[in-house]
Image 1 (cartoon, one colour):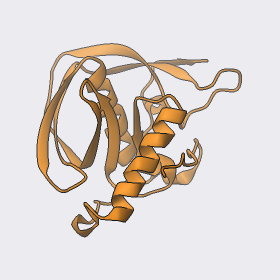
Image 2 (cartoon, rainbow, N blue to C red):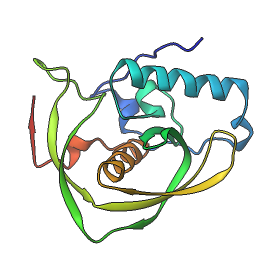
Image 3 (cartoon, one colour):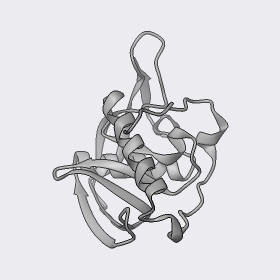
Length: 159
């Protein structure tokens, strides 16, 4: 049975660490698949469209992102292509709560499209191109793996 996990919030120092690669021997194990289920449950409960391992206290390069085909697990992801065109977008984050509202929001500038190469939960390599919102989600979650939050490059913040 999956359970929601505690989401770490800024200024927790774990959120500012560069994550380590997920050990390949972990992929496909019951422990790893249970972690994914728990992260998905957390994402659902918190009404997020993505969640990265460091947000739940795990220093691994992995995240889950909501795609048009459902939630997708990205293990040890890398950007293959980033578009030259950028878009401005209003972002929020499960790890950046607000005082009055559920969370803070901010105006960010991101690449309009990105292509990411990663492994799935069983170690199968895949590549996905994200445009628009999916591009934002992929960049946002990837930032978590390098110890960055959207507030680090937001032009303004509000609740």
